[in-house]
Image 1: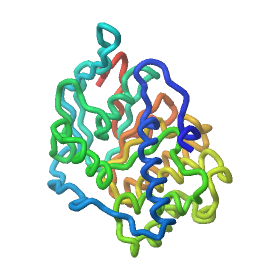
Image 2: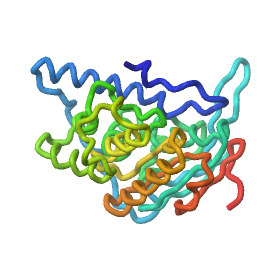
Image 3: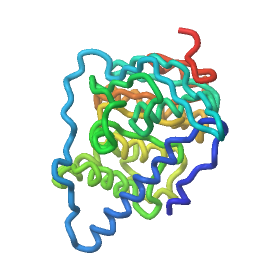
Image 4: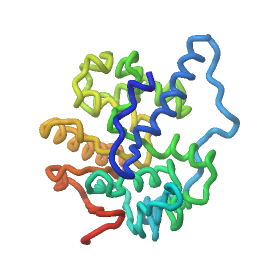
Length: 280
């Protein structure tokens, strides 16, 4: 099943977020096994959202971030002094070609990777100083991920995929039905809730992935080229869904793209070339 989700290797530094989704799928499969063994899902003591201060400014602040990877006897300098801010309720796009460094940066914004130097603050907390367990809790409760390869479990319906994300986030089961229905209606899949991924179009699968990512009500939604595998019409629909989510769910969205046709809907665009932002 994991192999089904693996996307092809991309050039340069663009180790896609979808590679990290494999761990989420493995965790999901473990949960399913527990469910069918008639045992309750065990949650670790203290497995709850990390307390965070209310937003008084930027939800994300990136200060002089560098990232290098060792290669042979040397290293590749992928990010070269990144500075950016993302305000609550914004739709921010990281624009750039494959290999420019935008996905490496997105990985670090979600706590999936750590900078070699510099600071990343999420809601005032220094993510670069948190240990793996604390970053995991932060991702589980406050951050949602949308992967280019959708990262849906193929044997589960759209409803079950979204419901599973609530289980993984520790949301009380009494809230599942209403929240799953709301999220699928929000992305325009009210009549397709019980179809499996292979019965859905690419655009519909992407919308299931969006519903899955927002189900636990994260503060920040990170999307890795969510329109890359869609035609222009489907891409426009996904962007309309994003705008609706920001308005109705009060979330902030940061996404990567190389599609110039969708840039006009962004609140801010950071263009990346060779690990640096150019322009404004």
